[in-house]
Image 1 (cartoon, rainbow, N blue to C red):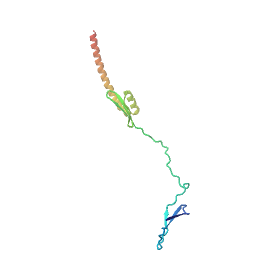
Image 2 (tube, helix red, strand yellow):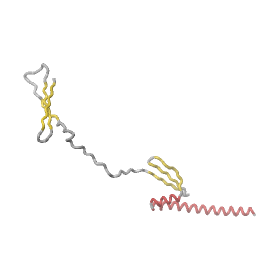
Image 3 (cartoon, rainbow, N blue to C red):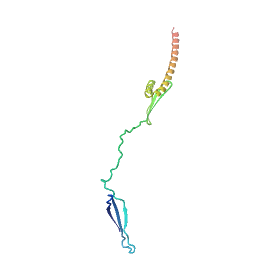
Image 4 (cartoon, helix red, strand yellow):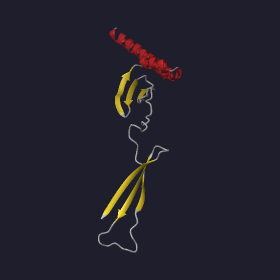
Length: 156
């Protein structure tokens, strides 16, 4: 049979409680007279104080700073030498708009709103397209004049 007996002794200097346990082991009908069983002392960890005396858990104060949430939008504007422009818009990995036709004037205005360096590069492309269209228009006007002259000869 095993018998456990514990007693609590307060420590007056620290205010802590120390616990000592005395254990007496007796065996049934087999007591050795030459070597009697000695009590075993065992130290046990101090008993925790009551919750009212315990320190409150320290929590980090909540930050008052605004958390910035980044949004990934990718706007791709492409143009051709002919002056045709289109836009693609991607939000994260999802394509929102694809191949939206936009005017060269709208592209030029938007570029000026963004930055002068961007506007300069886009205006060069738009001016090259204007020059190409003027040349084509002059060619077509010359061809139209020939067709009008040929039609006038046939009408006489």
